[in-house]
Amino acid sequence: MGQGEASARGTTMEGDCLSCIKYLMFVFNFLIFLGGSFLLGVGVWVLVDPTGFREIVAANPLLFTGVYIILGMGGMLFLLGFLGCCGAIRENKCLLLFFFMLILLIFLAELAAAILAFIFREHLTREYFTKELKRYYQDYNNKNDVFSSTWNAIMTTFECCGVNSPEDFKDSLFREVNQTHVVPVACCQRTSQNGEVAYTSLQQCLSGDMTFRNNKGCYSAVVDYFELYIYVAGALAIVVLTIELFAMIFAMCLFRGIQ
Image (cartoon, rainbow, N blue to C red; front, side, top):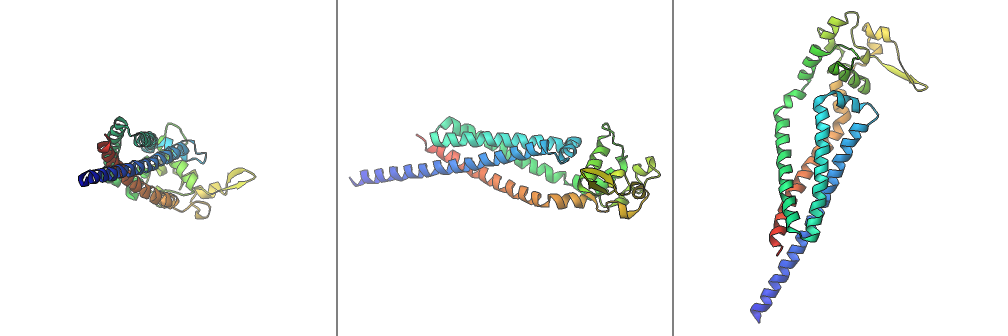
């Protein structure tokens, strides 16, 4: 009798533990579902944003690829969160195993992306951007000159000039092809009146008058603008990785516990 009671009690505790894991699994997958929805929202916002950021992304192949990677990862997490929720609630072993394998692949892919970002971090330094600007920027608003168009969009959108300052255009390709201009047109200050945008004093700006040009470097301007978003994205990435790890653990525990 004592052994029967102990066995029944053990079975009840095991069932309670399995039920707890099931609902924890549901909660974690619901968070993954929300994370995927957030990434999808960010990707769509960048592609349809009317403030000019879309043109910057479209003109830079690296950023353009990154947006679609975000969309792909968001869609995958969205689907996985949905599958995990269904597998946990219905206690379906096939769904749980499929969920575990896919989220493991995503987890490994995210780690690989982080490692690659660390390896190629030197391509995001001031020195690298300054060297590229001096070498390739020509100030043409020509769709075929993607590099110059991208920089024109950045300098206009963020009201900045050069990577560090307007001095970056000294001894550059821009000065060779535009010998009468000290800075590009995109560096000149603009004013908006009655919905129309006009340059404050274009000729004085192009001749080198500091009063009528934007003197802040674009590297600092962009970093200042996206500083909060960078920290939020970093914190969110850590949270997502942690959630994925626990979701895999709970999925395997629930898979082994289902009879």
